[in-house]
Image (cartoon, rainbow, N blue to C red; front, side, top):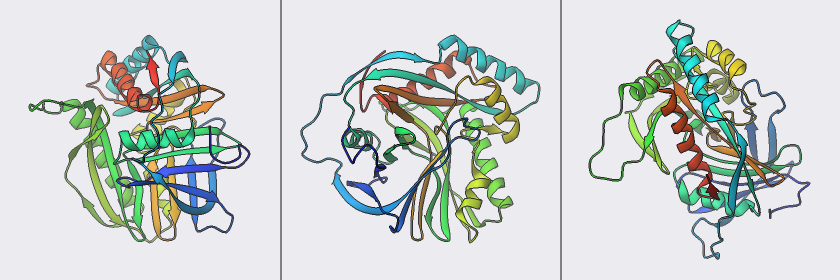
Length: 336
C-alpha cells in the first residue's frame, strides 16, 4: 500500500459531493483533527486521534490509469445459519418485551493482495459520491477504510444536522418502484423518534425534522430523515447523547447493547463507531458504516441490519450480504 511511511499515521478522505480527495498531513500544530471512535464495548480498541493540516489531493475522476481490481477469496466470517439463529433469538426477545429493535451484524474475511490506499478511497468515492469515504493507516491499528452515508453530527457551530437512517432494499432500476414495507417504515421511525428524544435530553435547540426520503448507496437504498438543530454545548456531549444510535444499536439502547454484546459473536472494533474530522468551527462526524480493516492481506468487512418483530431471519442474512457487496465490490473482485 502506498502513502506515507508505514510507521506514520496516514489519512486520505473524500467529502460528500467533492471533486477531489483530501489528505490529512500529521502535524501537532495543525488546525484539523481526524478522529475514529470504536464501537461501544469494543474489547481491544481505543480512540484514534490524528492532528494535522489538510492538503488538497488528486481528482476523484482523475486521469490515472485504471487498475484491475484484485481478487478476494472468502476465508472466514459469520456463518449463515449462525446469523439466522441469532435473528430468530432476537425476535423471541422482542416478543417477550425486552426491546423493540436490535441491530445484529455479520463479518466477512477475505484474502486479498495489492490494495493501495489511494485506489481504495478513490474507488469508494466513485461508487458512493454522496458519502464520506476515508482510509486511515496507523501503527496501532493497521489500515481501516470505509464509506458512510450517515452523518452523526455535521455542520458549523452552532448549527448542525444528523441523519436518521434505517431500512434497506435493493436499488430499483425500472420505472416501477415498490413501496417500502411496514417493517422498514417502522424500523426507520423508531430511529427518528429516538434521535429526537436524545437531542431534546441533551438540551439542543431549534430542532427541525425534515421529510423522510429514499437515498441510494451503491446497489442498495435506505430511508433517511435529516434533523437540523443548534447546540452550544461541546460536540462530544451531543455525540454522547446520540451514539450508539438506534441505527447501529437498538431500542431501548441498554437492553439492545446487552443482547449484542452477549450474542453477536465477534468484536465490532471500529465498525458502528464514528469517524470524521473537525477543523475550526466545521464538524464532520459520521456513523462508521460499511467499513473494513486490512491486516497482512486479510480484509475483514462488516455489515448489519435492524431486527424488529417483522423481521424474516433469512432475509436479514441476505441484507447483510447485500451491504457487504456495497463495501467490497468497488475495490475488489469478490469470489463469493
